[in-house]
Length: 101
Length: 130
Image (tube, rainbow over all chains, first blue to last red; front, side):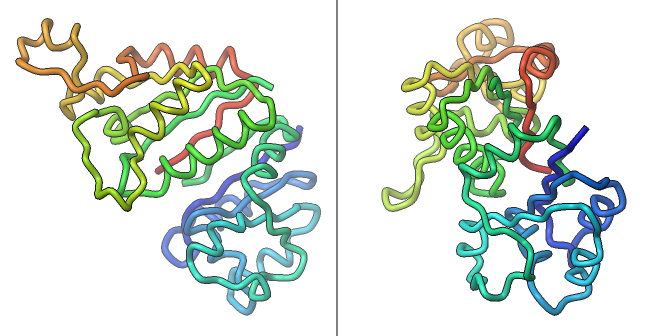
């Protein structure tokens, strides 16, 4: 059973990203969007946790990076930048979608 | 694939309704079915036809109405959340003795059962908001 976890809050404001990382099992995916994109920026405390999560694939929504002025080269290596079409396919490819708010 | 969408936040306050709209649009473009969009909590404020945003801003309410018209979407506003926030259709106007109605085109007021049904009948329920 694979799950797409969505995180829409900054990890520096709320603990939903931490909770998500604790629950995300191997083979699942995590999509950061809205203020959640701050979890995808290099050189932060949360970036280390993201890099350390094994077997979990990470995605960040490109339009929300752009809306917040975060350049793509600031994104942690290995996190895939996606558009809404890919967000939809991730939701379809995984068995469930879990929103961490 | 059959999707259901839940929107929990009002327009111009939280990005949720914008994200939900973009997701719904992308899903339809990819050929998926959106069996229902359910507006809950402050999300019911997406269904009032009294909003008049500045002309150079996106019109969140009309945008939903247009999408619903194009794709024959079922957009449901939670009745209990709507009553609290003054979102009224003809039936609610008469039942509650109000002198006006403001439900936007393409939206209908119904119960929480519609969300449960959407969760059961769709293959994926995607939740936007807090």
